[in-house]
Amino acid sequence: MKTITALVGLLAGFCLAPHAHALDLSLSVGGSEDANAYYRLGVQQDFTQSWWSSPSGRLTGYWDAGLTHWEADGGGSNTQSLSVSPVLVYEFSGNGIRPYLEAGIGLAVFRNNAVDERQLGSEWQFEERLGAGFRFGVGHALGLRAMHYSNAGLKKPNGGIDAYSLYYQLRY
Image 1 (cartoon, helix red, strand yellow):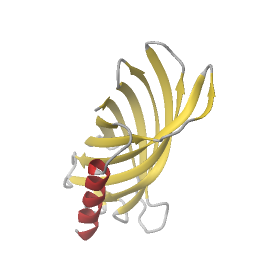
Image 2 (spheres, helix red, strand yellow):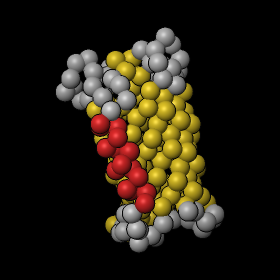
Image 3 (tube, helix red, strand yellow):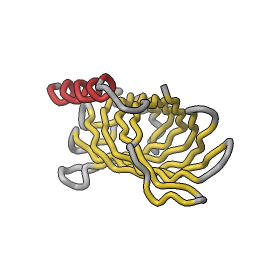
Image 4 (cartoon, helix red, strand yellow):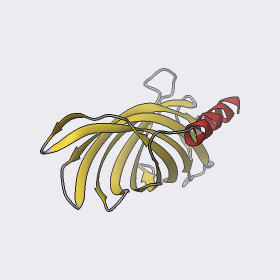
């Protein structure tokens, strides 16, 4: 419980700290390979720089902090997780619609060491992601994301879990 409280404090500090530029808010809806539904609320802050800018696009990124609710589909119980991750984004050039690809790896902590009936071995997990989407209008993004949670074999069992989602992101 102390770990969850500390991460909630970290997430609140991330959201309330003064920022030089805007934050984004995202909502994801998806499921795992075990057919468990999950819902994720995230807050993102863009990196202040970009690299390898060219006429075809640029490499940039953002910090992501999220709260995920995992809905039990089998005989297990619901759980929640908090995560923080840096994410690299390659955004292609475009006028109205700008496609992008993203990848990131970070840390997550689960309220318990199981998602439904899948044993994760530890509350602490690595969070890996791959995604694709497009930005449109002023501050809107829509995309698909695959996420993998695992403790990298640091504690047995290492059931890991794969999740797939549709997400919407809005700059505020």
